[in-house]
Length: 104
Image (cartoon, rainbow, N blue to C red; front, side):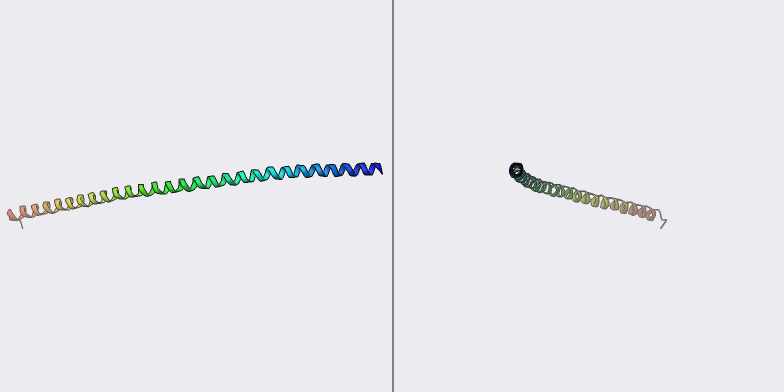
């Protein structure tokens, strides 16, 4: 019976050591998980802040581009008006020339 008792005691001691290792492992894993959760929250915060700043930058650039396009559109309109005005004046001059020479 001594062998059986010794074997039983050894099995119980090994089970206790395994239990202690498992408890230590659980503690370490819990700390790692908390650290990972904190890191994820920090990353989320940075992404939100950067996203907001990027959105504001895009909106500001959009306003600038929109203003420039409006300016270009206005310039193109007046350029077109000038070209049409020049064509009308040219045609009017041609008509006047032809009338005064008696060709019309």
